[in-house]
Amino acid sequence: MIIILAYVALSAQAFAGNRVIGNVRIIHASSGPTFMDPALMDLGHELQSVFKYTAYRLVSRKPLNLTHHQVVRIDLPGNRTLEISPTGFRKGRIKFKINILKQNKSVFTTEILLKNGSSITIGGPDYKKGYLLFNISATAS
Amino acid sequence: MLSQFVDNALPPETRTSLERHLSTCPACQHTVKTYQTITSKVTQGIHGEASRMISAQLEQTFLMKIRKGKAVKGQQISFFHGLIDFIKGKKFYLQMASFAAILLISMAFLQDQKVVFHSPSAIVNSIDGDIASVMILETREQHHTIIWYKES
Image (cartoon, rainbow over all chains, first blue to last red; front, side):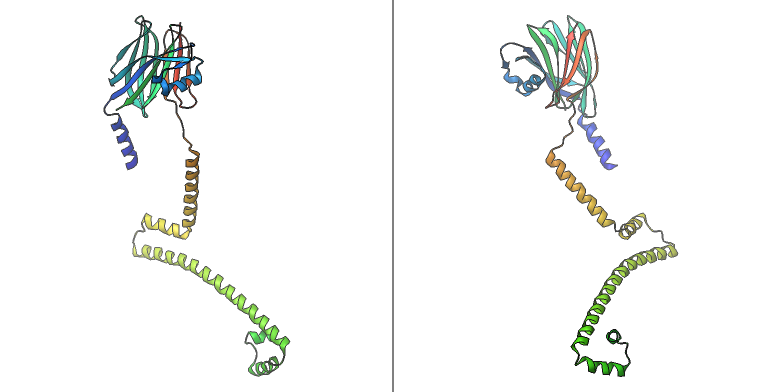
């Protein structure tokens, strides 16, 4: 019983700060000459294992430093916007609400449970003879 | 008669005359030695078995008497002492030691195998929007979650 209570207390304390730190990497994937951006070395192999694209370039990187329910808006190429908001914590995962807008109109909305200290990649929008991917990583502190 | 001689069951006069005969008869001497060896081994076996049985019986009897004694005096036997009695009575140590050994060996084996239960980097609760199609992928090595959608 003591162990269970201690575990619950420590789990609650782990997210007591309610601050989420991370970053968003905006990536352009295309079928051009083979290229892997050095800034994507940690992710490149994973993307190559599921996609046929030969070139991966980092377009930009945006840091995240959010409090609980704070919404951050990040401008994306192609008149798009990415909205991210941490909405809770559950079982060692950070709950996120993610919204992608095109010309101020919501086109894609998802709710995910991201493993603390891990990342997710969302992709698909067409851009310059290729596709855009958004890699969102976050850690609760 | 020789077996009775070995068992000390002969009358003194008969025993004396037989001893006289034995001193000059190698065949009878050999038979007597064989009888004595058999008798000695049987006696040793019986003593060993009896002492083992007595030890276990004594332990049980002793524990029962303690319990009865406490009950007569009106003392309540605690759960802990009851458990200890049970463990001692049922020879629980051997079973526990075997179980612990199996557990340790299994843990060592699993550690060598590096069995790790992976989970995806992200669990997708819901997806919505003005989209033509969507795929949720998980990479094989790092279990990285990827959502791929096509705008409509």
